[in-house]
Length: 226
Image (cartoon, rainbow, N blue to C red):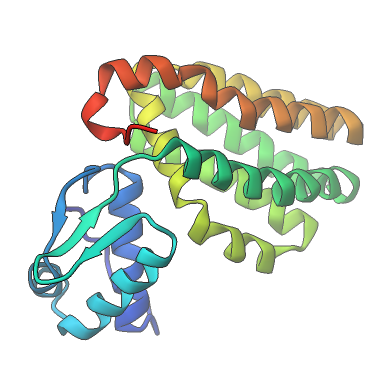
């Protein structure tokens, strides 16, 4: 499990929640694997209580299953939940991206351009961890431009199902297509074409399901049978 540095003023609960979320999304904690509260608490150098509370919070989103007397289990990928997560994200983020198109300044567009260039750079280096970091920042920047950061934080918890599936997609080497889709969104924003921006964003979100069959064949142990 990857353990980042604890942030300034970050509570033990928030730290435990962030670490668990990041490791589930990155697949460091694989679908179907067990999580020990005591072990996690020891690795984070905190008590079991904040870890327990973080797992209870994650259980509400169905990304983990709390099994009495046994511990917690990282849920298998449930495509119904991935689709619902994508629906929530698309509904909110589509509107946010549209608003960002209307409000983006020259400096905002330059920031997005730099982000896409860095995505291309890390793709070329096959550093998919850094690529994902800038992929996430690309979308986060849209919220910042639109001045809708409360929406961003609201979406993040349920978005974990979508984000984990998106990480798995990188394992079949379709990263170039993701970059192409990001650039199409950026080009539409440059043109101040709101309808085109919304269309390109919808193509980007919906395109992820193209790879479901291949991923199920390659990683059948990760998926729940629907």
